[in-house]
Image 1 (tube, one colour):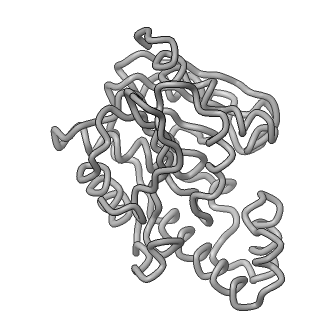
Image 2: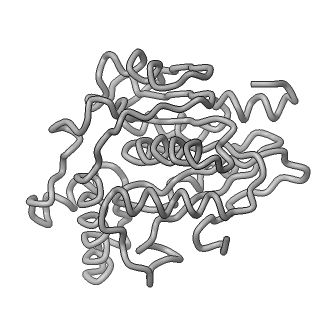
Length: 253
């Protein structure tokens, strides 16, 4: 798979596995770059870029959830990763979960572990809070949301052309989001879930709900901060992932 789809960010000599992060919805892969300096030994870092952004800018956006999930599944199946751990944050947590169920159903190489961050269990479906912002919001409301969550760098906001591209990306991704539907699938791989103690988007029963969606080992960690935790926690998140800690120590998860 060419490097514009599965983009290597960190390689370690004799690494035994790769941590693969999925693009952010309404964003891309840049949020993973702080992880490069904080990767535990024994694990490479790569990010899977969705179509329509960054190195895949010339490709059309996915039209709906099923199309994007199929694309991500195909990309992971085609990538020569060896053992890997799949990570998704927020709506991309649902995408990572959906893709893992598709890989299992197809008998393709599935992740050694699944790590999901700041996302409710999908069995509730999309709630009103998860549908915010909406496609009906005006540009200023959308730009305010992007800025609040650190998805709009100053150089983008100061350039009308780049701002327009950011809005186009955001509307495309939220159009995909709005077509999500949970079909009852579960996974068998080890599942680790992170949530922020002060995240208003996460339900109080998130741990119990996710535990019902895997037949494998399960762990739920509540971290400080909100939807993106604190900057320090986000930078060092790979060290909190059981599968990467185990690779560094040479022990089984």
